[in-house]
Length: 428
Image 1 (cartoon, rainbow, N blue to C red):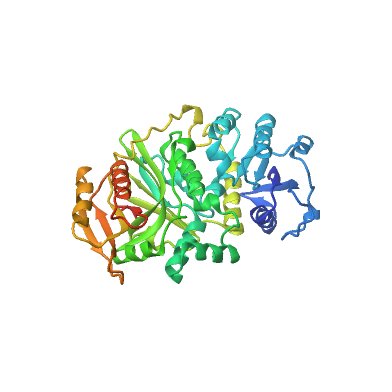
Image 2: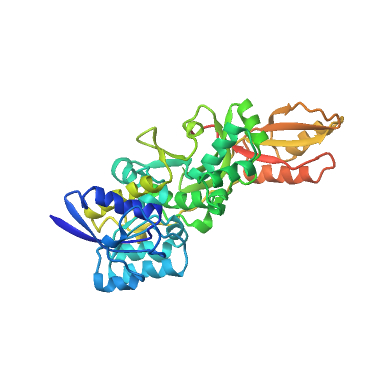
């Protein structure tokens, strides 16, 4: 029987569940003995779900020089000096790595992807993308070499949980976030989730592997859910739409459009029906219509399962594959279409003075940017002086709709902020 020597660094919820899963399987995966030769974390005395005394504890990963593992599993997270030094240590000492750290990989891709490829080392990141959803393995084994034209879905379980709870309980974003934190479904500092940054980290990695191009985090645009309003969720439902934080990369000839943003999607779509902490990814390609994967996007056991999956991939790894099926050095940098070139309908909600000529003035502002208005809906109100309205535009580029919004803000008839939400009618 073959044997691999594994060090596990980071023993929080995910790392501890990796140990438990290996114990449950008698340390044997695919007829290979997985020996845990070292473990380490910040706090040795912290209570954990396994017996820490069974394993050799290290306080510094440099101690691994004497232990010589074949593989390090890192579930620490972050992008600071310690993590950078750990990754450099792996490269210097020719140790393969499995990580759940999407921020490090997405934001510092050039520093490490090519290095792991040059040293013919395995770099597994199934756990860094969509939790228990086996998207990396499925893309490599089942979807490639088909040409993928688009990937899209829900890539963050925390934001999906919050939006789902807003719909369910009919309460504000702020109230829902407080409940999510109290119930353990969101961290006290959830800024990476709420801003869309976490979802963009995952989109970068999934775009790299799906399209075989170098997608750079610094080139890609993301928005979060901090400013969504319950009234827009409710009005969207009246129009046949559900709001979700949508991650998307699509091919446009030899260029790409990539985005993470709150969008309205048809309420009959799979994305609209994917709720709470579940994630979903859909692939569209030339040789297949659609392939979708749905599953838990977070949690100790689901994420640890993805790490076990990467251990299996490491056991059967062929160095000629590279991190992204082909070597990173051979991948070309992704080029992007202008946001103005991709046209979509937009939902706008605002409150304006209830007087003659206002709607005509609004229509003129849209007309000046060659934007047609598909519909204007006046909402019921008890205020005779101010009326809330919803406008659905015909398909338009982001630049033009932004210019209209800027011009509306300069008028004397606008009486509150404007909600602007992109409508994605053809995904789901």
